[in-house]
Length: 120
Image (cartoon, rainbow, N blue to C red; front, side, top):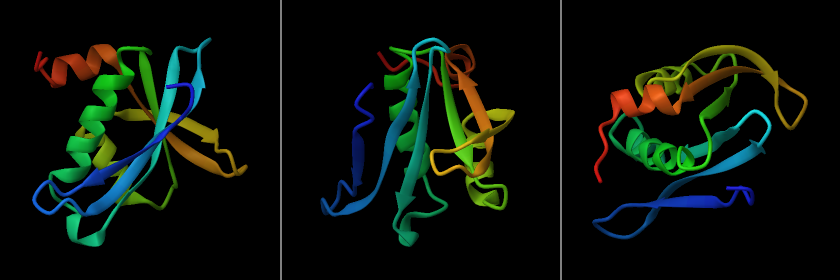
């Protein structure tokens, strides 16, 4: 978690890389981390791929933190809707690592665990 390592997404059928995402901005004091910089090849937009990738990342993150933050550009309505679909809610604005104001969305472990039953 602290390294913010990047993850790649592959298509299980052919093994080709279809996108990626990463953790960033771990804050031990706030007990939170960001998930972001998620990209998918256009052919994989609007399907199950983004939700599945976020679910896996959230499940992992919530073994370490209580809250996950998503920073999204104000005009990026597609990403805003995508994080709302997984249970994230608006949480004001924050300045990203490039000094730009972004909309912040958050999801807590409690909300995530109510929406996504454990697959243990």
